[in-house]
Image 1 (cartoon, rainbow, N blue to C red):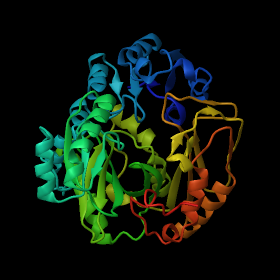
Image 2 (image 1 turned 45 degrees about the horizontal axis):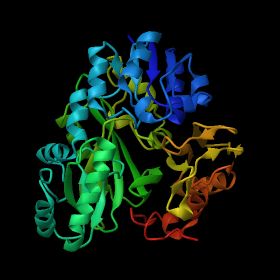
Image 3 (image 1 turned 180 degrees about the vertical axis):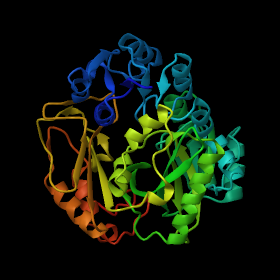
Length: 448
Protein backbone atom coordinates (compact mmCIF):
# COMPACT_ATOMS: atom_id res chain seq x y z
CA UNK A 1 0.00 0.00 0.00
CA UNK A 2 1.10 3.55 -0.78
CA UNK A 3 -0.58 6.28 1.26
CA UNK A 4 1.53 9.41 0.84
CA UNK A 5 3.78 10.40 -2.06
CA UNK A 6 6.61 12.90 -1.84
CA UNK A 7 7.61 14.37 -5.20
CA UNK A 8 11.36 15.01 -5.27
CA UNK A 9 11.04 17.68 -7.94
CA UNK A 10 9.57 21.07 -8.75
CA UNK A 11 7.48 22.95 -11.30
CA UNK A 12 5.13 21.38 -13.78
CA UNK A 13 6.14 17.76 -13.22
CA UNK A 14 5.53 17.99 -9.48
CA UNK A 15 2.07 19.40 -10.16
CA UNK A 16 1.39 16.65 -12.70
CA UNK A 17 2.22 13.91 -10.19
CA UNK A 18 0.15 15.56 -7.46
CA UNK A 19 -2.83 15.52 -9.82
CA UNK A 20 -2.49 11.77 -10.32
CA UNK A 21 -2.12 11.23 -6.58
CA UNK A 22 -5.36 13.08 -5.94
CA UNK A 23 -7.17 10.82 -8.40
CA UNK A 24 -6.08 7.83 -6.33
CA UNK A 25 -6.78 9.48 -2.97
CA UNK A 26 -3.11 9.61 -1.97
CA UNK A 27 -1.57 12.23 0.28
CA UNK A 28 1.04 14.53 -1.28
CA UNK A 29 4.23 16.20 -0.10
CA UNK A 30 6.13 18.92 -1.96
CA UNK A 31 9.74 19.87 -1.40
CA UNK A 32 11.12 23.27 -2.31
CA UNK A 33 14.31 25.28 -2.31
CA UNK A 34 14.44 28.84 -1.06
CA UNK A 35 14.06 30.00 -4.68
CA UNK A 36 10.78 28.08 -5.02
CA UNK A 37 9.12 29.07 -1.76
CA UNK A 38 6.26 30.79 -3.65
CA UNK A 39 6.10 28.28 -6.50
CA UNK A 40 2.66 26.91 -7.48
CA UNK A 41 3.79 23.33 -6.87
CA UNK A 42 4.29 24.13 -3.20
CA UNK A 43 0.65 25.18 -2.82
CA UNK A 44 -0.60 22.15 -4.74
CA UNK A 45 0.56 19.63 -2.13
CA UNK A 46 -1.01 18.68 1.20
CA UNK A 47 2.29 19.43 2.92
CA UNK A 48 5.52 21.14 1.88
CA UNK A 49 9.04 20.92 3.27
CA UNK A 50 11.92 23.34 2.70
CA UNK A 51 15.07 21.49 1.64
CA UNK A 52 17.74 24.14 1.27
CA UNK A 53 19.19 27.04 -0.70
CA UNK A 54 18.58 27.62 -4.42
CA UNK A 55 21.51 25.70 -5.99
CA UNK A 56 20.21 22.26 -6.96
CA UNK A 57 23.19 20.47 -5.42
CA UNK A 58 22.17 21.89 -2.03
CA UNK A 59 18.47 21.12 -2.38
CA UNK A 60 16.86 19.02 -5.13
CA UNK A 61 20.04 16.96 -5.65
CA UNK A 62 20.64 16.41 -1.94
CA UNK A 63 19.38 12.87 -1.37
CA UNK A 64 19.68 13.07 2.41
CA UNK A 65 17.52 16.20 2.57
CA UNK A 66 14.89 14.51 0.39
CA UNK A 67 14.85 11.38 2.54
CA UNK A 68 14.69 13.47 5.71
CA UNK A 69 11.64 15.27 4.30
CA UNK A 70 9.99 11.91 3.62
CA UNK A 71 10.66 10.74 7.17
CA UNK A 72 9.41 14.03 8.63
CA UNK A 73 6.10 13.84 6.76
CA UNK A 74 5.57 10.08 6.90
CA UNK A 75 5.71 9.74 3.11
CA UNK A 76 6.00 6.09 2.19
CA UNK A 77 6.80 6.67 -1.51
CA UNK A 78 8.90 9.08 -3.54
CA UNK A 79 8.25 10.03 -7.15
CA UNK A 80 11.40 11.58 -8.66
CA UNK A 81 9.80 13.21 -11.72
CA UNK A 82 12.45 13.78 -14.39
CA UNK A 83 15.91 15.29 -14.07
CA UNK A 84 17.49 15.83 -10.64
CA UNK A 85 17.61 12.41 -8.88
CA UNK A 86 15.27 10.56 -11.24
CA UNK A 87 18.00 8.44 -12.83
CA UNK A 88 20.30 8.23 -9.82
CA UNK A 89 20.54 4.54 -8.93
CA UNK A 90 22.14 5.29 -5.56
CA UNK A 91 19.13 7.43 -4.58
CA UNK A 92 16.70 4.69 -5.66
CA UNK A 93 18.73 2.23 -3.58
CA UNK A 94 18.72 4.60 -0.60
CA UNK A 95 14.93 4.79 -0.81
CA UNK A 96 14.71 1.01 -0.83
CA UNK A 97 17.03 0.69 2.18
CA UNK A 98 14.95 3.30 4.00
CA UNK A 99 11.77 1.32 3.39
CA UNK A 100 10.39 3.96 1.03
CA UNK A 101 8.90 2.99 -2.34
CA UNK A 102 10.79 4.54 -5.25
CA UNK A 103 8.24 5.15 -8.00
CA UNK A 104 10.34 3.99 -10.90
CA UNK A 105 12.51 1.05 -11.93
CA UNK A 106 14.94 -0.88 -9.76
CA UNK A 107 18.30 0.64 -8.81
CA UNK A 108 19.95 -2.11 -10.84
CA UNK A 109 18.05 -1.19 -14.02
CA UNK A 110 18.87 2.50 -13.53
CA UNK A 111 22.55 1.76 -12.99
CA UNK A 112 22.88 -0.54 -15.98
CA UNK A 113 21.13 1.78 -18.41
CA UNK A 114 22.69 4.91 -16.93
CA UNK A 115 26.13 3.75 -18.04
CA UNK A 116 25.77 4.35 -21.76
CA UNK A 117 28.48 1.89 -22.80
CA UNK A 118 26.99 -0.89 -20.68
CA UNK A 119 23.54 -0.02 -22.03
CA UNK A 120 24.85 -0.40 -25.60
CA UNK A 121 26.30 -3.82 -24.78
CA UNK A 122 23.09 -4.98 -23.09
CA UNK A 123 20.90 -3.84 -25.95
CA UNK A 124 23.16 -5.38 -28.58
CA UNK A 125 23.03 -8.67 -26.66
CA UNK A 126 19.22 -8.43 -26.70
CA UNK A 127 19.25 -8.05 -30.49
CA UNK A 128 18.61 -4.31 -30.51
CA UNK A 129 20.62 -2.46 -33.22
CA UNK A 130 23.03 0.13 -31.81
CA UNK A 131 24.80 3.06 -33.45
CA UNK A 132 28.31 2.02 -34.60
CA UNK A 133 30.88 3.13 -32.05
CA UNK A 134 33.21 2.11 -29.23
CA UNK A 135 32.16 -0.93 -27.17
CA UNK A 136 34.00 0.43 -24.11
CA UNK A 137 34.83 3.83 -22.69
CA UNK A 138 37.80 5.52 -24.32
CA UNK A 139 41.15 5.17 -22.58
CA UNK A 140 42.64 8.24 -24.24
CA UNK A 141 42.58 10.49 -27.31
CA UNK A 142 44.53 7.96 -29.36
CA UNK A 143 41.83 5.35 -28.77
CA UNK A 144 39.15 7.85 -29.76
CA UNK A 145 41.01 8.64 -32.97
CA UNK A 146 41.44 4.95 -33.83
CA UNK A 147 37.73 4.16 -33.30
CA UNK A 148 36.69 7.27 -35.23
CA UNK A 149 38.88 6.28 -38.19
CA UNK A 150 37.38 2.77 -38.14
CA UNK A 151 33.74 3.91 -38.20
CA UNK A 152 34.37 7.08 -40.23
CA UNK A 153 34.04 10.77 -39.43
CA UNK A 154 31.97 12.67 -38.42
CA UNK A 155 31.57 11.19 -34.94
CA UNK A 156 30.14 12.20 -31.58
CA UNK A 157 32.09 12.03 -28.34
CA UNK A 158 29.57 11.33 -25.57
CA UNK A 159 29.62 11.10 -21.79
CA UNK A 160 29.24 7.51 -20.60
CA UNK A 161 27.26 8.71 -17.58
CA UNK A 162 25.41 11.40 -19.51
CA UNK A 163 22.21 12.26 -21.25
CA UNK A 164 20.25 15.19 -22.59
CA UNK A 165 23.07 16.25 -24.88
CA UNK A 166 25.37 17.18 -21.95
CA UNK A 167 29.04 16.32 -22.37
CA UNK A 168 28.67 15.75 -26.11
CA UNK A 169 30.95 16.99 -28.88
CA UNK A 170 30.83 16.52 -32.65
CA UNK A 171 34.11 15.87 -34.45
CA UNK A 172 34.22 16.26 -38.23
CA UNK A 173 37.84 15.39 -38.92
CA UNK A 174 40.87 13.83 -37.15
CA UNK A 175 42.51 17.18 -36.44
CA UNK A 176 39.67 18.20 -34.15
CA UNK A 177 39.56 15.05 -32.02
CA UNK A 178 41.98 16.06 -29.25
CA UNK A 179 40.35 19.42 -28.51
CA UNK A 180 36.84 17.92 -28.61
CA UNK A 181 37.93 15.06 -26.34
CA UNK A 182 39.26 17.49 -23.72
CA UNK A 183 36.16 19.70 -23.88
CA UNK A 184 33.72 16.78 -23.67
CA UNK A 185 35.61 15.30 -20.74
CA UNK A 186 35.52 18.60 -18.83
CA UNK A 187 31.79 18.98 -19.38
CA UNK A 188 31.10 15.37 -18.40
CA UNK A 189 33.11 15.69 -15.19
CA UNK A 190 31.30 18.91 -14.28
CA UNK A 191 27.82 17.52 -14.99
CA UNK A 192 28.11 13.89 -13.88
CA UNK A 193 31.16 13.65 -11.66
CA UNK A 194 33.02 11.40 -14.09
CA UNK A 195 34.66 12.16 -17.42
CA UNK A 196 34.38 8.76 -19.13
CA UNK A 197 33.62 9.12 -22.83
CA UNK A 198 32.68 6.87 -25.71
CA UNK A 199 32.38 7.52 -29.43
CA UNK A 200 29.48 7.00 -31.82
CA UNK A 201 29.04 7.50 -35.53
CA UNK A 202 27.34 10.82 -36.29
CA UNK A 203 24.31 10.14 -38.46
CA UNK A 204 23.39 12.82 -40.97
CA UNK A 205 19.79 14.12 -40.82
CA UNK A 206 18.31 11.23 -38.80
CA UNK A 207 14.94 11.20 -37.11
CA UNK A 208 14.74 10.81 -33.34
CA UNK A 209 11.97 8.39 -32.49
CA UNK A 210 11.35 6.91 -29.08
CA UNK A 211 9.17 4.10 -27.80
CA UNK A 212 7.32 4.37 -24.50
CA UNK A 213 7.49 1.09 -22.58
CA UNK A 214 5.94 -0.04 -19.31
CA UNK A 215 6.66 -3.10 -17.19
CA UNK A 216 5.23 -4.58 -14.00
CA UNK A 217 6.53 -6.89 -11.28
CA UNK A 218 4.79 -9.87 -12.88
CA UNK A 219 7.13 -9.65 -15.88
CA UNK A 220 4.71 -8.04 -18.32
CA UNK A 221 6.29 -5.49 -20.66
CA UNK A 222 4.18 -3.45 -23.07
CA UNK A 223 4.78 -0.57 -25.43
CA UNK A 224 2.59 2.51 -25.80
CA UNK A 225 3.69 3.26 -29.37
CA UNK A 226 6.13 5.87 -30.61
CA UNK A 227 6.86 9.55 -30.27
CA UNK A 228 8.57 11.70 -32.90
CA UNK A 229 11.12 13.97 -31.18
CA UNK A 230 13.24 15.28 -34.05
CA UNK A 231 12.77 19.03 -33.54
CA UNK A 232 15.61 19.73 -31.10
CA UNK A 233 18.15 22.31 -30.06
CA UNK A 234 21.50 21.22 -28.62
CA UNK A 235 20.27 17.60 -28.61
CA UNK A 236 17.33 18.56 -26.38
CA UNK A 237 13.76 18.34 -27.59
CA UNK A 238 11.44 21.20 -28.43
CA UNK A 239 8.51 19.50 -30.18
CA UNK A 240 7.21 15.94 -29.81
CA UNK A 241 4.28 14.14 -31.38
CA UNK A 242 2.49 10.82 -31.67
CA UNK A 243 1.93 9.08 -34.02
CA UNK A 244 5.22 9.83 -35.78
CA UNK A 245 4.39 11.20 -39.25
CA UNK A 246 5.35 9.25 -42.34
CA UNK A 247 6.81 6.36 -40.37
CA UNK A 248 6.63 3.15 -42.46
CA UNK A 249 4.67 0.41 -40.65
CA UNK A 250 7.55 -2.04 -40.99
CA UNK A 251 9.95 0.41 -39.31
CA UNK A 252 7.49 1.04 -36.51
CA UNK A 253 7.04 -2.69 -35.99
CA UNK A 254 10.80 -3.12 -35.76
CA UNK A 255 11.14 -0.26 -33.29
CA UNK A 256 8.41 -1.43 -30.93
CA UNK A 257 9.63 -5.03 -31.04
CA UNK A 258 13.19 -3.93 -30.28
CA UNK A 259 12.07 -1.65 -27.42
CA UNK A 260 10.06 -4.37 -25.71
CA UNK A 261 12.91 -6.86 -26.14
CA UNK A 262 15.36 -4.37 -24.64
CA UNK A 263 13.13 -3.66 -21.64
CA UNK A 264 12.53 -7.36 -21.03
CA UNK A 265 16.26 -8.06 -21.17
CA UNK A 266 16.79 -5.95 -18.04
CA UNK A 267 13.52 -7.03 -16.34
CA UNK A 268 12.29 -3.47 -16.48
CA UNK A 269 9.50 -2.32 -14.14
CA UNK A 270 7.48 0.94 -14.33
CA UNK A 271 7.60 3.59 -17.08
CA UNK A 272 10.61 3.99 -19.35
CA UNK A 273 11.55 5.04 -22.85
CA UNK A 274 13.95 3.62 -25.41
CA UNK A 275 15.25 6.22 -27.83
CA UNK A 276 16.35 5.50 -31.38
CA UNK A 277 17.82 7.29 -34.37
CA UNK A 278 16.20 6.37 -37.70
CA UNK A 279 18.07 6.99 -40.94
CA UNK A 280 16.65 7.88 -44.35
CA UNK A 281 16.64 4.23 -45.41
CA UNK A 282 14.57 3.16 -42.40
CA UNK A 283 17.46 1.67 -40.47
CA UNK A 284 17.19 2.32 -36.75
CA UNK A 285 19.73 2.36 -33.93
CA UNK A 286 19.41 2.37 -30.15
CA UNK A 287 20.51 5.67 -28.65
CA UNK A 288 19.76 5.41 -24.93
CA UNK A 289 17.10 4.42 -22.42
CA UNK A 290 15.51 6.93 -20.08
CA UNK A 291 14.66 5.02 -16.91
CA UNK A 292 12.00 7.48 -15.78
CA UNK A 293 8.90 9.34 -16.85
CA UNK A 294 9.62 11.51 -19.88
CA UNK A 295 8.94 15.24 -20.16
CA UNK A 296 6.84 14.42 -23.23
CA UNK A 297 4.66 11.72 -21.64
CA UNK A 298 1.49 13.86 -22.17
CA UNK A 299 1.83 13.25 -25.92
CA UNK A 300 1.35 9.53 -25.37
CA UNK A 301 -1.47 10.15 -22.90
CA UNK A 302 -3.37 12.35 -25.35
CA UNK A 303 -2.79 9.94 -28.24
CA UNK A 304 -3.86 6.81 -26.34
CA UNK A 305 -6.22 8.12 -23.68
CA UNK A 306 -4.20 6.43 -20.91
CA UNK A 307 -2.82 7.97 -17.71
CA UNK A 308 0.85 7.04 -17.34
CA UNK A 309 1.37 8.61 -13.92
CA UNK A 310 -1.61 6.87 -12.34
CA UNK A 311 -0.28 3.61 -13.74
CA UNK A 312 3.19 4.40 -12.34
CA UNK A 313 1.67 4.72 -8.89
CA UNK A 314 -0.31 1.50 -9.21
CA UNK A 315 2.62 -0.53 -10.49
CA UNK A 316 4.89 0.88 -7.76
CA UNK A 317 2.31 -0.37 -5.23
CA UNK A 318 2.72 -3.88 -6.65
CA UNK A 319 -0.35 -4.01 -8.87
CA UNK A 320 -0.14 -5.63 -12.33
CA UNK A 321 -0.48 -3.47 -15.41
CA UNK A 322 -4.11 -2.74 -16.13
CA UNK A 323 -3.57 -2.66 -19.89
CA UNK A 324 -3.43 -5.27 -22.66
CA UNK A 325 -1.15 -4.64 -25.62
CA UNK A 326 -3.87 -5.08 -28.22
CA UNK A 327 -6.05 -2.49 -26.46
CA UNK A 328 -3.36 0.22 -26.53
CA UNK A 329 -4.04 2.18 -29.70
CA UNK A 330 -3.26 5.67 -30.95
CA UNK A 331 -6.76 7.15 -31.03
CA UNK A 332 -5.75 10.72 -31.80
CA UNK A 333 -2.82 12.75 -33.10
CA UNK A 334 -1.08 14.71 -30.34
CA UNK A 335 1.72 17.30 -30.43
CA UNK A 336 3.60 18.95 -27.58
CA UNK A 337 5.67 22.15 -27.60
CA UNK A 338 8.05 22.93 -24.76
CA UNK A 339 8.11 26.62 -23.91
CA UNK A 340 11.42 27.62 -22.33
CA UNK A 341 12.61 30.92 -20.91
CA UNK A 342 15.36 31.10 -23.52
CA UNK A 343 16.31 33.48 -26.31
CA UNK A 344 16.48 31.57 -29.62
CA UNK A 345 18.13 34.60 -31.25
CA UNK A 346 21.07 34.25 -28.83
CA UNK A 347 21.71 30.53 -29.22
CA UNK A 348 19.00 29.70 -26.68
CA UNK A 349 20.62 31.66 -23.87
CA UNK A 350 18.55 31.26 -20.68
CA UNK A 351 16.38 34.27 -19.86
CA UNK A 352 15.77 34.44 -16.11
CA UNK A 353 13.50 37.09 -14.66
CA UNK A 354 9.92 37.61 -13.50
CA UNK A 355 6.83 36.75 -15.53
CA UNK A 356 5.04 40.08 -15.63
CA UNK A 357 2.25 38.73 -17.82
CA UNK A 358 1.14 35.18 -18.63
CA UNK A 359 -1.91 34.33 -20.73
CA UNK A 360 -2.30 30.73 -21.87
CA UNK A 361 -4.82 29.33 -24.35
CA UNK A 362 -7.71 27.12 -23.35
CA UNK A 363 -10.28 25.22 -25.34
CA UNK A 364 -11.09 21.93 -26.96
CA UNK A 365 -8.21 19.44 -27.02
CA UNK A 366 -5.71 21.90 -25.49
CA UNK A 367 -3.71 20.79 -22.45
CA UNK A 368 -1.32 22.98 -20.49
CA UNK A 369 1.24 21.58 -18.05
CA UNK A 370 2.67 24.63 -16.29
CA UNK A 371 4.93 25.23 -13.33
CA UNK A 372 4.51 29.00 -13.35
CA UNK A 373 1.95 31.78 -13.13
CA UNK A 374 1.93 35.55 -13.58
CA UNK A 375 4.37 36.97 -11.08
CA UNK A 376 6.49 33.82 -10.91
CA UNK A 377 10.25 34.24 -10.75
CA UNK A 378 12.27 32.25 -13.28
CA UNK A 379 15.50 31.50 -11.41
CA UNK A 380 18.92 30.89 -12.89
CA UNK A 381 19.42 27.68 -10.96
CA UNK A 382 17.20 25.24 -12.87
CA UNK A 383 16.10 24.11 -16.29
CA UNK A 384 14.18 27.08 -17.78
CA UNK A 385 11.09 25.10 -18.87
CA UNK A 386 8.03 27.28 -18.20
CA UNK A 387 5.18 25.15 -19.50
CA UNK A 388 4.23 22.52 -22.04
CA UNK A 389 1.51 23.18 -24.59
CA UNK A 390 -0.15 19.95 -25.78
CA UNK A 391 -2.87 19.70 -28.39
CA UNK A 392 -4.62 16.82 -30.08
CA UNK A 393 -6.85 16.27 -33.08
CA UNK A 394 -8.65 13.58 -35.01
CA UNK A 395 -5.93 13.92 -37.63
CA UNK A 396 -2.40 15.32 -37.62
CA UNK A 397 -3.55 18.18 -39.82
CA UNK A 398 -6.19 19.15 -37.30
CA UNK A 399 -3.64 18.95 -34.47
CA UNK A 400 -1.13 21.13 -36.35
CA UNK A 401 -3.77 23.78 -37.07
CA UNK A 402 -4.91 23.74 -33.45
CA UNK A 403 -1.30 24.07 -32.25
CA UNK A 404 -0.62 27.02 -34.54
CA UNK A 405 -3.70 28.82 -33.18
CA UNK A 406 -2.81 28.00 -29.56
CA UNK A 407 0.73 29.31 -29.95
CA UNK A 408 -0.61 32.58 -31.34
CA UNK A 409 -2.72 32.94 -28.21
CA UNK A 410 0.20 32.43 -25.81
CA UNK A 411 1.31 35.69 -24.18
CA UNK A 412 4.43 35.66 -22.01
CA UNK A 413 6.10 38.90 -20.88
CA UNK A 414 9.04 39.57 -18.63
CA UNK A 415 11.39 36.97 -20.14
CA UNK A 416 12.38 35.83 -23.61
CA UNK A 417 10.84 32.51 -24.68
CA UNK A 418 10.99 29.91 -27.44
CA UNK A 419 7.45 30.78 -28.57
CA UNK A 420 8.51 32.79 -31.66
CA UNK A 421 10.63 29.87 -32.85
CA UNK A 422 7.86 27.36 -32.16
CA UNK A 423 5.44 29.43 -34.24
CA UNK A 424 7.88 29.29 -37.16
CA UNK A 425 8.34 25.55 -36.73
CA UNK A 426 4.62 24.84 -36.84
CA UNK A 427 4.18 27.05 -39.92
CA UNK A 428 7.12 25.53 -41.82
CA UNK A 429 6.19 23.52 -44.90
CA UNK A 430 8.49 20.62 -44.00
CA UNK A 431 6.99 20.31 -40.52
CA UNK A 432 3.45 20.53 -41.88
CA UNK A 433 4.34 17.73 -44.30
CA UNK A 434 5.86 15.66 -41.50
CA UNK A 435 9.34 15.67 -43.01
CA UNK A 436 11.60 16.38 -40.04
CA UNK A 437 15.07 15.49 -38.82
CA UNK A 438 17.21 16.28 -35.79
CA UNK A 439 19.44 18.88 -37.44
CA UNK A 440 16.78 21.28 -38.69
CA UNK A 441 17.19 23.86 -35.91
CA UNK A 442 20.99 23.90 -35.99
CA UNK A 443 20.95 24.15 -39.79
CA UNK A 444 18.73 27.25 -39.58
CA UNK A 445 15.58 25.81 -41.15
CA UNK A 446 13.39 27.91 -38.83
CA UNK A 447 15.36 31.15 -38.77
CA UNK A 448 13.59 34.43 -39.47
